[in-house]
Image (cartoon, rainbow, N blue to C red; front, top):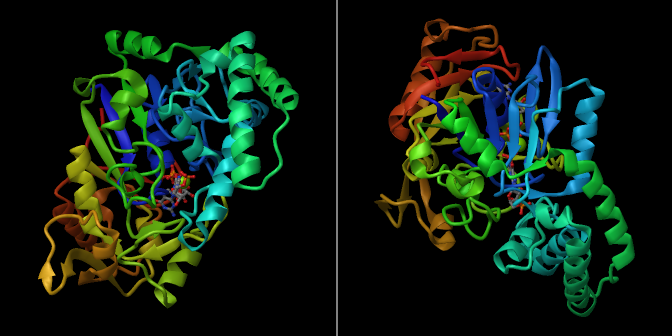
Length: 427
Ligand code: GDP
Ligand code: IMO
Ligand code: MG
């Protein structure tokens, strides 16, 4: 096994960063394939926490090649801040490679993200306001600026001039905002270009060289299945493809290059931002999970909405990405509960639904079918072997695996790299 994808099965923040960091020890290359600094991946090593938005979660190991792939949208100022923070901590950055085909987030993307959200009013998406959506819009409209263009002063100056003129029309005439100053943006971004240049490469070739060399590759998803542009709860989604299929276009490999897909599942459900959430808890238990789990967004600090585990969602994610095994995280957050509920189906107009509904109107009306399972009320955070988990904890994760139709691969019982129970070899 030489290529493994780690991706989210719910609405993000499942603990992908932790699982990627854990597995990165065995890999030579770690690749981010989509999203941007809307992601917030937390990695904890010996009690020290690192929050990563754009840098692949393998960066904390020296000597790994860490690729920011062509499918990612890059805010250069933000990326430089992340790089500098890591350098200040003494982290080795020599393995970082930024795709010259990745798209650049410009200040007008952030402004448009905000203006768009304000204009939507009540029906806002609850984006991270990092300019992600507007940047992918430009990519698809074929007016985006790529890293390779940013590296070329003349090319960048020309493209920026045309784009800024168009965006200023939008900002001033449609949204009633101030126009942006061309010279200021140009100077700011040319400065970034010089600082990023040493890391820029045509990463599709770096990656294929590594594949041909027999290296172990780890693909790191950001966001998650239910935020996928095609398969999530549209329009309450992000603008990229977090599913395993996103790896092919976001990194530049064929489907046969993927040997194994690991779906990361939080042991309960959270969602940050607006949109349907069938198993959401509005009462005490939801608040208890939020407090015990410190469920506040890594990127925006917003309180995350919390709810019971929804295996209908996880099963759907397993189908879409042909997930081989599950990495279940944050089991320890449920350690104190006397009993737990798992959603095993949806009822719509009195009948069970067999498909995940595309219509948000239908989704708003479905009733979750719950199974109640006894809790384990035991601290699991020091457990490192599956057999040592309390019986009821094992029953809980085994029921999840059964409903989802994927094997149990990893059970995580704490944020630290070490707090990980591995049930099968991952590479
Ligand atoms: P990601 O976006 O999928 O990488 O997840 P985030 O980093 O946004 O959120 C997951 C949070 O849970 C982070 O604070 C992690 O450090 C933490 N975490 C990951 N796995 C576990 C676990 O098994 N138990 C606990 N208590 N925390 C975990
Ligand atoms: P990680 O990788 C959770 C959500 C936003 C919003 C929607 C669209 O840490 O799991 P966007 O800014 O992408 O246009 O916002 O997607 N969202 C996330 N939620 N985890 C994330 O990333 C997210 N990235 C975006 O809250 O609802
Ligand atoms: Mg996150």
